[in-house]
Length: 428
Image 1 (cartoon, helix red, strand yellow):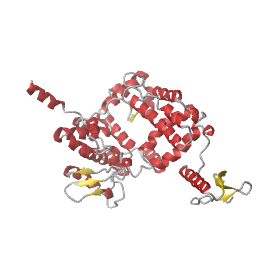
Image 2 (image 1 turned 30 degrees about the vertical axis):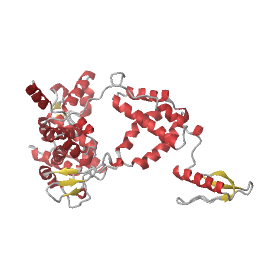
Image 3 (image 1 turned 90 degrees about the vertical axis):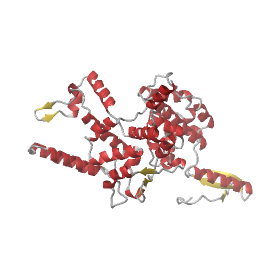
């Protein structure tokens, strides 16, 4: 039989030996019943529809499919379904652990005890209880998709549903700390160690309450600058797949922060790592008080060669934005001298040599110090939510943050305890 083109449908044919109707799907001949009858025509339509729905492949027999093969099939589906969204990244860690432990196991034999084994492995990686529950839920979604497409018996998915989530205080998994707003004095101290580009990103996010990913992907073409209050519609956002529309309002103070970064090329990203890197280098040159020795010039040439091989991107991603803020926090809040790199002559000890020199206790102390004195961009959203709730109420905070329910806003907005104390002092 000649090879089909990607848009062609296999034909309904007569099988000469038996006289029945036949169709060939993925190299497999499927008999449909007596040729020319309505029953065989219906069987043909049903078989072709199932074949197309399964990505123009005939579903494998349940016993033939291993967990590794199932994950390969699911990943092809997930790449189409989730695209470039964060959810695709969220699946990676869960499925990597599942594949590592059970790749050669029959998918039909994967049951509740196997799922609990994967869950225990995630706990041993020191992941938080909430994240472990999310990983387990994603594994269930894989097997739900498999049952839906008849790759495994539906009983496999129903069995996995019997595995309950980890409960607070009743498991060895660590508890994650709630995300808190970051104080104004902490932000002000950090801003002094950020480039103008990153400083503008922090100030804009604090005034609008947008998510870190939304500010990283901002382009001039996504902004409506007509009227007193501008609007920003991100090209993609967290709840887009639910059909929600996200509009971010930008007031006069935020406009003053944003205006210097608007571009003539409306498709270009507003905040560029290339510009931030150039700003940082210019500031370092301006602050220099001595000449540049030849050895440093040679190091600069080697560094430039490495950067040409791997130049900064045309936009920040959330992780790069977070790392830049972490470095500024380290510069703003210096740990005790014994936990800092040494200066030998006129050169500072390299980071690798510094970390090798620390004992296990000193390294743990340094990690605690950094954890207590660093903050991340998502905390700015919590800070904005807390301020909006305190000044204008929970409903205004809900609308500005783009939440569908005030219950979600409650997670972001810290309650104004000062008002509660004031009321109780008056009540008695």
